[in-house]
Amino acid sequence: MEIEVVPIIERLKVENGKILLTTHENPDGDGIGGMLALYKFLKKKGKNVTCAMKDDVPYIYNFLPNVDKIKKLPLDEVFDLAIVVDAVGLHRVKAPVNAREVIRIDHHIGGEFNGCDFIDPNAPSTTYLVCKLLRIWDESSIDKDIATCIYTGLITDTGSFRYNNVDKNTFEVAKFLVEKGADPFYISTMIFERNKPNVIQLLTKTLSTLELYYDGKIASLVVKRDFIETTGTDEEDTEGFVNYARSIEGVEVAFIMIQKPDRKTWRVSLRGKGKVPVRDIAKEFDGGGHRDAAGCRVIGEESEVKRKIVETAIKYINQYETEKALV
Ligand SMILES: [Mn+2]
Image (cartoon, rainbow, N blue to C red):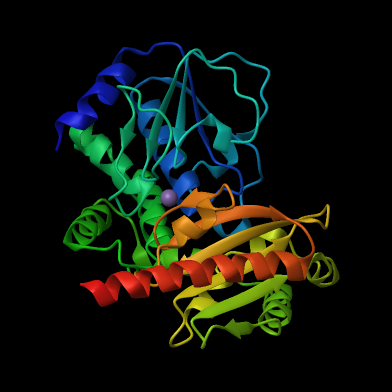
């Protein structure tokens, strides 16, 4: 199990040039946490590291140590090595990166494998993999700041240890991080207990769009651009809204459609409950993700897009039920 991490550690040890750490667009706690954990660790190892990504840091992650060091892509610089965190490739970064070599640390499936990549689709978060890497490299260099960043990715990608990607190893890593100084109450408070009143207004508008289909097995929510504009919020404030649709008893597929500023593109986030693989639904629209959390972009009228997603969800619900009946 440990052997797979060794090539990336050996590669990083010999890199004395410029290293770029980056993550996907619409960055989350796992991408930013993973990037900043590596940033501080590599700095301690005397490396020349830069953190940069396409979008701004969402408000809820502004407490993370070294968050002010994150630059905006594109950068007018050539890097010797780029490490893409929480993404299967540079195409997910959605901004130009000039690097001689790219390696990936991720828990998503996809892309061509390169010998230095560290990818494990069974890991609950990318920061879980980052933790594994840093522990094998030099456990004593993991300090409170690094532990805080890793813990952030761990709780945001597991819904605070509620999703089915959690097992005893997740708690073992969490215990290690707390021993290293991560403060669970502080981190959870910073991420989940600092809602602005207008975000709750946005949530209210969004929840009023709730619709159920197919005997209540499918639930949809819509965030119209007007909702965002009239409440003075941002698209990133919709993070987690889809979970309200998923939380309904009997729902197997939940999705939220977020209208992009061009008003014809919809960013769709899908959530499952361990039965119907929502990643397969997203794939039909050229998207991807995890079995229970996936996304895609669809262009069209609201009702048309919704109908297509619902029809595809029905197909996969039927497929799941047929397979279950055969077992
Ligand atoms: Mn992740």
